[in-house]
Amino acid sequence: MMTEVKEALLTIKEEQDKIKVKQPVVDGYTNFVFLNVNGNPMSRHNVEDAINGIVKCYNKDEKRNKF
Image 1 (cartoon, rainbow, N blue to C red):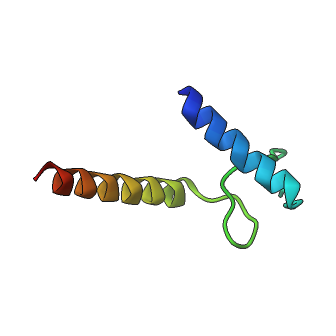
Image 2: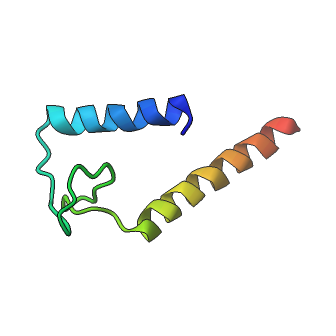
């Protein structure tokens, strides 16, 4: 994992701890980073869609900045 990614994830966890986000327990697991507005862990599909949207936006900006 890239250092920048690790730092970003740790920052998210620190913010969750600061505002005392109630962590759900799913099959014995807790400390989720990606939670939805209801406080439940996001599905793989939700996270994947968000990442794909970010990549699409980034690529669009890069293409526009080349010309």
